[in-house]
Every structure is written in C-alpha cells, then in structure tokens.
Image (cartoon, rainbow, N blue to C red; front, side, top):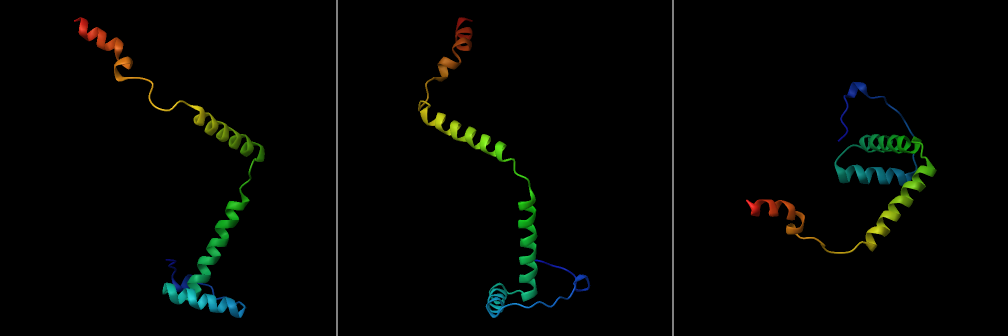
Length: 101
C-alpha cells in the first residue's frame, strides 16, 4: 500500500470523464483505499512503463540470441533419450583399483 505523510502531498485538481469517475470509485471501494491512492498507484505504473520503454534494445543481438535459443531447443529434440551409461562404467577405473588390493 502506498504510504506518504500528509505534509509531503501536493494537491492537484484534474478533470476526468464520468466513466473514469465510476471506475475510480468502484476500485477504491473494492480495495478499501482512497481514490487518491488509486490515482497515485496508476501514476507510479506509468513511470515504471516509461522506464522499461527507455531501455535501448539491440535488435541484431536479440535476433542472434533468439536464433541460438531456437537452435539449442531443436538440438535437444534430436538428442537421444534415456541414460546411456551405468554407474559401474563411470567408476570402472576406480572399482578395478579397489578390487585389486
């Protein structure tokens, strides 16, 4: 929940459409918060979206990474299924040394 001290708030008056007012009142009532709280959260959400959109995307690098991931996925589809080894085959050398002594 958004918590600020009253003295830190700045009063603003805005004009909204009747449908916005209905939505604002309904959401505030459903959540048990003030209409101002809903507006502040919406403004915070706008700021978050703006920050994400400002990040530069290297399109060529993104395409290359996506191609790599697709190729990796395709190669995994062709990989043999199941285990082709046994514990004894992995430790054969060690087992043979232990059994000789």
